[in-house]
Image (cartoon, rainbow, N blue to C red):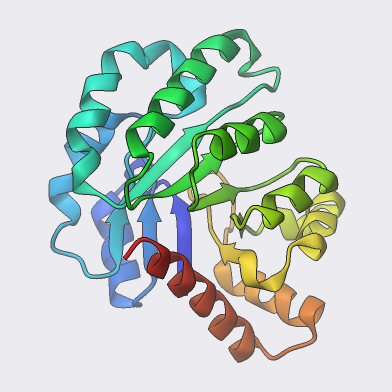
Amino acid sequence: MIDVHCHFDMAKNPVNYITKNERKKIITIGMTNLPSHFQMGMRHIRQYKYIRLALGLHPLRAEEHDKEYSIFRQFLKDTSYIGEVGLDFSREGFSTKEIQIKSFEYVLNCVKGKSKILSLHSRRAEKETLEMLIEKGIENAIFHWYSGSLSVLKNITNSGFFFSINSAMIQSDNGKKIIAEIPKEFVLTETDFPYIDDSCIMNIHNYLSELWGISKIEVENMIDSNFKNLINRIK
């Protein structure tokens, strides 16, 4: 199984969490909300084969970004994964809209031309997020927990970007509509642990098996193939 977006650094016992996933051979990419969090955690995950840590600059932590820029650039060379990054123009994040745009532009300028995979937060800013990716020539990105319009979704898939879906999405009507519109070759799975209760990748596999009319094994193979295709882009 593959979890391309979680926050294991937020677990009550991160070591227990990632050790369990390592034992089960679950490919797990842990997000960070700030570069200083990556700095603290990176040395702890080097011993693992299936666990990776992403370098993040979360839009909802925008007021803390100024003092984090230099740390982001310092550790950019130490991971292939960038996340959680992006924009949030919802009620929760709108007051820092201009800071977020500046920060996201900084991230994109840093990773442009480099072999990186971005995991994107784009709540109520899906169109703007996509436009900035295209403007900066970014090719490898995953839209995490997408909740935008179907028209923008089509533009995202036409641009070759991926989507990671979670258990919460398969329990809402809007989430189901979105999943049904994503081409199979652009689907990846996530837990967004610990922000989703009872987040289970197997439940997502079961749902996709029914939606796509294929076996659960075929779903697993499809997700695995999609992830390998994304990885091969940066090799």
